[in-house]
Image (cartoon, rainbow, N blue to C red):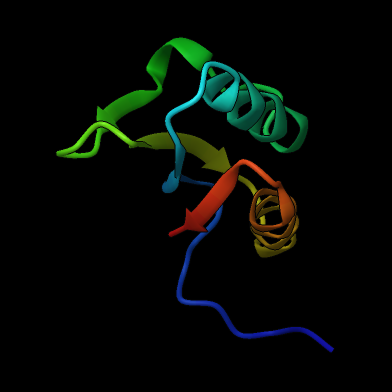
Amino acid sequence: MSRETLIEFPCDFPIKIMGARVDEFAQAVVGVVVRHAPDFDPASVEMRPSSKGNYLALTCTIRALSQAQLDALYRELSSHPLIKVVL
């Protein structure tokens, strides 16, 4: 059964990922993103610390090829222990 989507593929799709500001956070996020979007450029990650500096928000813009790809990426990111929120 296919699901209707408002997204036209392929497209550039930004994903915002937030988690604790620890050394391995950005590396862990990039590792997951690259598994699902092999052409993702880690140098393109945008990073913003929270106002108190306890959390880090990363924006990764991938070239999304399908809804299934995005669903799998969101599932893996959401289940990662260092990641608190995926938008």
